[in-house]
Length: 295
Image (cartoon, rainbow, N blue to C red; front, side):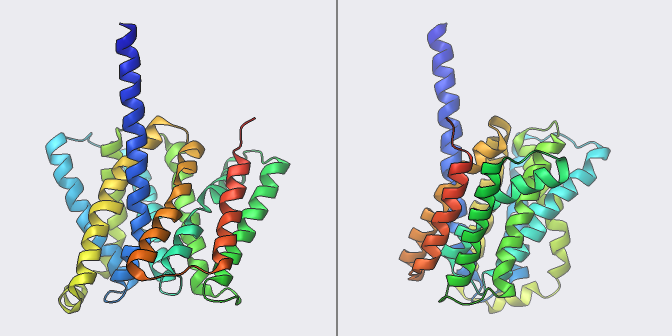
């Protein structure tokens, strides 16, 4: 019996870390896919199409596996989660990526734990230690350096800062996801979050068919992959991860995402990240690593 429990524990740990690895790979591809799709699509239409595809995939999964019927009182909460994690986050980050390289975009996304801590302190009155305050300042300084040095050392422009606003939206989603603590399994949660988050994006649907017809096959393939992997698959897996381990611990595993994004961007987009982006990225990741360092 003892060996059975050890085997079960090892199986659960493998499932958890395998899920985290897939999420990192999927989200590492995301900024590269967005850059490819931007050659033919507007930022809003990329967000719309990838989540229409993701919604359809999740509908198939829901039909096969079955999901929990939501309670009426929970519907506004699902809409709020979807608004921040799907609608706002992706329109903002897609718009910002018109002016920011895929590598820089992925590095800036790692500032999410910093914003998560700030929002938890401001909204839920969580205490911030001196060490955490220093880490926040260092991390945000690194983020500004990435934005300023992405294409040569210049003053940050408004479009580049949209990536940081997108990270803030994602941090708000993280905090609310844990705070709401809705009693649903991970697949049911992600189905409703994605479906409700897709609803506001339908505002951009009137002329989307024209863009699909005019887009290159490479852009259409990029949108399809964005819908299948970083959206449908990664969202379901991330919901499972958040049910298994604490929020801050889960967020820490996303440190690897920029390395995956940088590798894909170098191979397929020919990007060469500037020294300022790399230094800023080290400041962001270093600040978060120091903030969560255990004695």
